Length: 248
Ligand SMILES: Cc1cc2nc3c(=O)[nH]c(=O)nc-3n(C[C@H](O)[C@H](O)[C@H](O)COP(=O)(O)OP(=O)(O)OC[C@H]3O[C@@H](n4cnc5c(N)ncnc54)[C@H](O)[C@@H]3O)c2cc1C
Image (cartoon, rainbow, N blue to C red; front, side, top):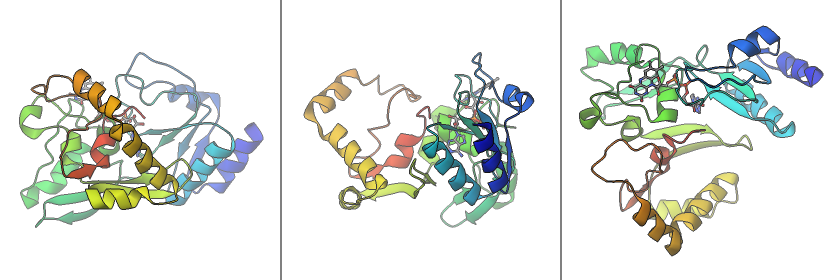
């Protein structure tokens, strides 16, 4: 495996570490869990991410995306390759003041985003106690929020689109879909199409529907992370919101 990791390291523009010291440093997050990863990658660009995905697929290992690593339940701990995007994926890409949205890379720190938004009279509400270091990628991953969540809601309510990669290396963008658009996505022959078809099968099954309704937590409790957000809107579909808060 060391030879393969060395070849991977040489093919990346960013860094890859598989020495004991770095693996120990990345064996924990803010939780009580600890597991030594196979390696630690600091990708520099999207090509590096694509190379890491194909390496993981070919070598039957996993990737563990990581931003600030402040998770409390071992979300960024594992025996695969930790992919730390906090160093090079830190750009605010686009701001639309009319429509009040901003497009960012995952390594943008929540408080720094708000410093950038302030002169435009805008504010990204969800506030974790760790907001001076927590990054947007991790906030989406955890569906983070804070003490004002009854007013500001949590990250998923503010997530308009998510761009990312599936396990076969294909690039995807998840955003609001009308039911017709959703059905069209289901016809795609790709892994993306398979994802939508599987969701349709799961959620279309009357037995599952009944079970979800029966087991659904109290609706008056706003903060629910342990279930999929299946109740977002009746006439449109929001996979980007369903993804937020799933432990990856
Ligand atoms: C003292 C303390 C107080 C806290 N208070 C709060 C609080 O008030 N509210 C709250 O919600 N949380 C809180 N947390 C938990 C944590 O700080 C937040 O959830 C924070 O937003 C996580 O951000 P992060 O950048 O550290 O993410 P990480 O821990 O690095 O990652 C979080 C998740 O996102 C995934 N992820 C990160 N980047 C990507 C990417 N590019 N692509 C795909 N997946 C990705 C990771 O794999 C992981 O599953 C607290 C933690 C501590 C230690």
